[in-house]
Length: 309
Image 1 (cartoon, rainbow, N blue to C red):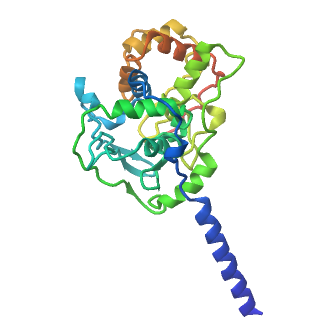
Image 2 (image 1 turned 90 degrees about the horizontal axis):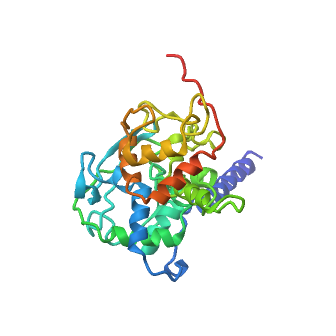
Image 3 (image 1 turned 180 degrees about the vertical axis):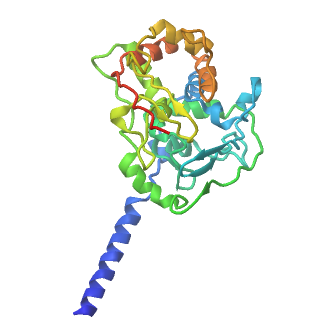
């Protein structure tokens, strides 16, 4: 009887392991899945600034043309460990110069890098997955024109179990999101454009939405602010809540802030929002206005009170 029980337990363990192995398998994006699309470099540059690529992947003190040198190396300390931001310049030895367009699309849509390796969601593919494949192709084409930077970035510094990448397959099943952005047929073209930029390439919710213990954003508190993902300070509420959010800001106030970095009270942007504002200022007037218009349509959610110290 005991022997049969042991055999049954072993068989169940093997079956569970096989199921787990398949559930956590990285997805792939094949060249054959790419649409017939001629890259648009101007749109690729728009996606670059909307996506804030230089904010993480350029040197922290970069200015001017150096913002386009995406050699990585920034260390992001989080409750899960330290993520060292990779080199995504076109360098073939230390960057992503050998990545195909399909590799790049797979990274943004599925969170899977070249060679079929899961990527940590410190890279916000949970938002980038909402982008249209054509926009991702354009972004890749633009990034291919940037200077190659030779820079070997250290591995992430993560303890067990977070250093087991295969486990990210389960995390993705539970938390990765809903795929490509779908426009709201009841909303205007401007609102849908703003929604796309905010929810997709802009990945605003990755910082402005609180997270659960697994590091996933909490959907019913979207954009209501909370602890900084890197564990230092707080991120403000950008819903139209009149007390704790941007309810008192007009669309023009938001446009001015995105363009200049100045709030309605003539305070200036700082901290991690400074490079974000710098990127937003590179967008067209129409796109900036669309982002402002969309933010004013968000449900007003009061910020949760900070815990007593």
